[in-house]
Structures are given as structure tokens and as C-alpha cells.
Length: 85
Image 1: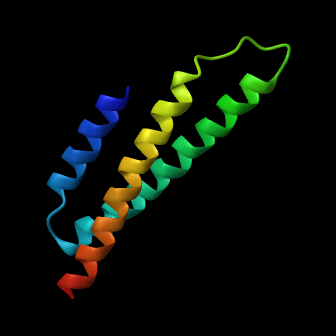
Image 2 (image 1 turned 180 degrees about the vertical axis):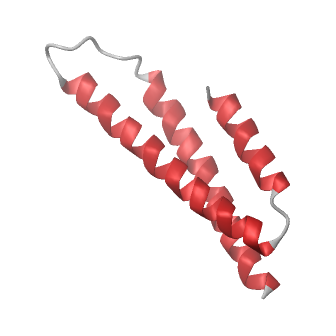
């Protein structure tokens, strides 16, 4: 799952070369970040629920890795946007 997310992020970033494409990338990655962050929230709730089977704790670690990658992509894309004007 982590490798697929990384591959998707790298491919999406590679495909975006013009300013407008970068703006779209930032919007898409910000949306993806929010969805992955929410998934982590639900995993934590599942882990804390007594009546629900525990998900693999490694999933939360992998989600955090993916969030760091997406955050870096968003940050570097915003920096490049300011360079293009």
C-alpha cells in the first residue's frame, strides 16, 4: 500500500509541469492528505474499541509514512509555485 501511494505521488508530481497543473496537484494532494489522515483517525478508534477487532498496528505506521511523503510533495510544489510567477 505504501509503495503504491509513493508511486502514485511521484507519477502525479512528474506529470505536473505547468503552474496550473501544480495548482491542481496541490489541491489533489491536500485532499488525499485529509483522507489519509481521517483513515488514521478511524484506525485509532478501531484500536480503542473493545467490541471491534484490532486492525494491524503497522497500518498506522504506514499511514504516517505516506502522510510525510504527501506533505513533502505539497511543500515542494508550493515552493516551486512561488518560483514560477
